Amino acid sequence: MTKQQELIHIINRYTEGDGVFKTAIPSLFFMRRSNMSEPNHGLYKPSFCMVVQGEKEVWLAKERFTYSPADYLVASVHLPVSSQVTEASPDVPYLGLKLELSPSQVLEVLDEFDIRTVSSGTEQRAMYVSHIESALLDAVIRLARLLDTPNDISVLSPLYTKEILYRVLQGRNGNILKGIVMEETAIRQIREVIEHIVHHYDRSFRIEELADIANMSISSFHRHFKEVTALSPIQFQKQIRLQEARRLLLTESADAADVAYRVGYESSSQFSREYSRLFGYPPRQDINRLKA
Image 1 (tube, rainbow, N blue to C red):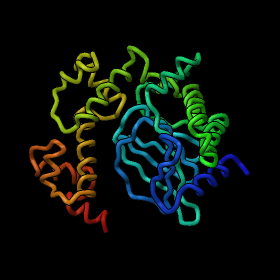
Image 2 (image 1 turned 90 degrees about the vertical axis):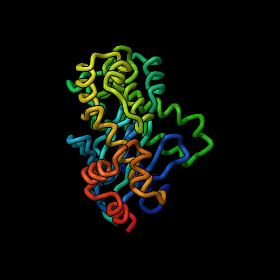
Image 3 (image 1 turned 120 degrees about the vertical axis):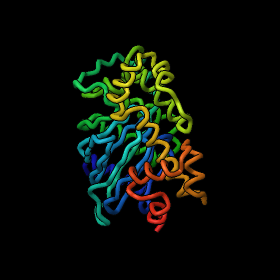
């Protein structure tokens, strides 16, 4: 059995039907789809992601990231994205895994080991796809195997997660992940602004306020924010507002005007226009379509 086949068997055992499945290992999720999907909008948390079977596309603004079982994807900060499974069937479903990461975990690995990261020439963008190497795949399999020995999870899962981070940090784009915790790096300064927007997305803000959080001039802040996220601060906030509005409309019996106000819009007509622009349909039509 190859390494990839072993991982496929593990995910098959711990998923039933299509969906996203939280595992007994903290921050580890399995995904399964038996057909190609339409674009799914969501907020990616900092995470390490793998396609184990099939293929997937992730769009960050107008930038496309395609990855398959030969690759892995890293999001080093919170990012509003659109993702789509592009290769899947009932006989050969799409299978994937996601391991959510925290800056404190990255810092712990950097403090413990002398890691020399390699510059790829594209240090600013907070999302990237890299080829998965054998040593990294081994660490992922060791982590997934723990699901079969649950008594070992509390002791060994932090060690295997640390090894995964160690391998990612040593990879071709490891400097991007390293940058989120290093003093005086643009990506760390922008990360602090991103976290502020994510936690206060329903509030209006002035660009001067955000630039102060990043400790940058307004022009420098604008440039670095777009380099990291591929979006302007206003576009970033707008996508988070609209994604949260869609979630509320799907899960609650609230009308569009009420939801628009709850996510920070003062004008329901502006909300409807921007919702239609992002999701392709007006709010109520979109929700009826998704529920159907």
